[in-house]
Length: 430
Image: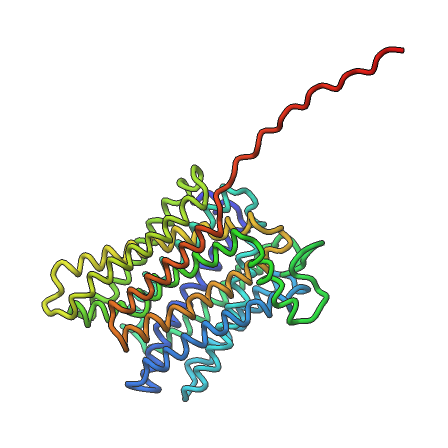
């Protein structure tokens, strides 16, 4: 897998992704502590609103940026997004009210919605070989999982020495380092969304039409409609983990607070394991053979989780339910990685190279729309009905998504043999 790092351009871009993710992880920890300083017991509602703002920015901004960025060189666009994120992180330690947090979070996530699709669309051009691109996707998945495990530990080390506001300076450093690494390489291609003949992202036309061009392209391809359904299945399982881990561990099983990151670590470990093993698997089997079974696995895992949580709250650690929860979290992480990691391969094979920026922007926006649907289901149903009810509802959502993907993405058919035509009779000699 690490052989792709011999490519200097990709090595610098991957390092830029890693340091930016580390900075984002530090900001996540610091933002929670800042919200508690500003809102006290209402910190949860502040963070929930900030999360909703993040999803709205992701869903709404990415297609608009893809439409506006058709004349901007991609390296300049990536650097501008990194500098914007660094500027926002620089201002966060000095905010004094909740509305300022909301405003800065929106700008920060709008910049991320600019950076991520443009970054994703560059990698297939840097690594045009399918073998190399598959390994790059696994490395990217591994980077995200490592960030979720390492950043809290790094933040804890910093907090042992200084106040939490210093974490934002680490975020600034990460984004500035990312910008410097992007500047250090020459990227292939020209602008961030220049579509060729028949491309989705053309300079002409109204802004609204250009903003929706990538989404129309995405929804016009059966395989990509299936990919969107699979993203919904991932969101159904992932939202249960992200929103309700603390409820399951503390409220259902009566475990100590220190076990919450352990459960989240099990989810990340499942995802990382798949990211390490998947490239060799994808050398031998198709994306469809991996992704569709993983979506139905999410359904089964959520059904099993409903049984684990149906017994209600218990004291004394939950007995057998605690290792069962860890196994289910690891399974959901693995299933999510089985779907998310090959997604870039599927997208690249489904659209022309000139349309990749618009297609990646559309996928970024639509997939986060799935999370925007799944988060409230996981949170509101878990709080107002019960945890098993929320789990079953998300399981039904995942089942509908997996079934839709199965019917939308038919298996590849072998080409029909060409029948030999009988030889033409030669004209009679005159």
